[in-house]
Image (cartoon, rainbow, N blue to C red; front, side, top):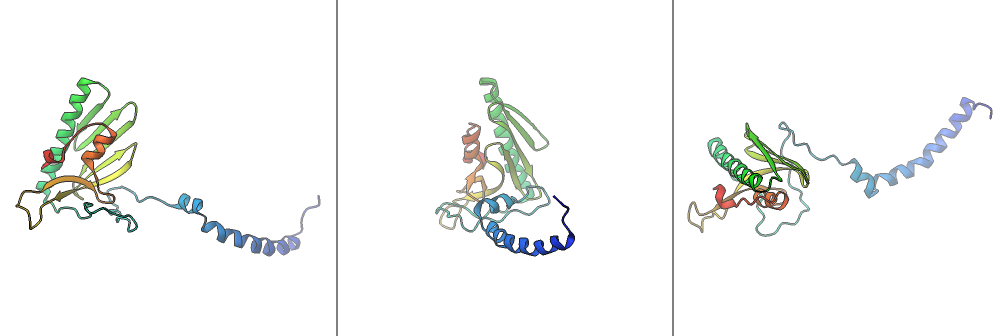
Length: 188
């Protein structure tokens, strides 16, 4: 086959681009390509909290606002949660040996041979607890005080660490994924 001349290539180029243009436009709207191009928000310390999705339907009890905590109150509640969780994990480790937990400097690594490694850590600048789970992925939990309204007695509300995007409670998620039971009442 003889080599193509530049003039011949230039004549073919506009025609080829005009044929491809409608296909490119069609690809942009295809569901499988838009999902592949989506980048999840990062959970690095310098990134802002992701906004809750507008399209999600929430039930009546779904909380979307976190409780403002002082730094002292945050540390007290977060340390209480981490110590309670670590105590329960140590007890489970002694009984069955299927969990290995390490806790220091506000970071807890929970290694489960069948599932993988969970990492739970305190984030004082944002007053959150972060969870990295091999099952449900990364989540940021805010402390939410539920049930303390003007119709109830002061101090009568219960608090829990809640993922505000979908209303998932940290205690329920840990019970579901790891099998460690931590009740919200124990954290208040």
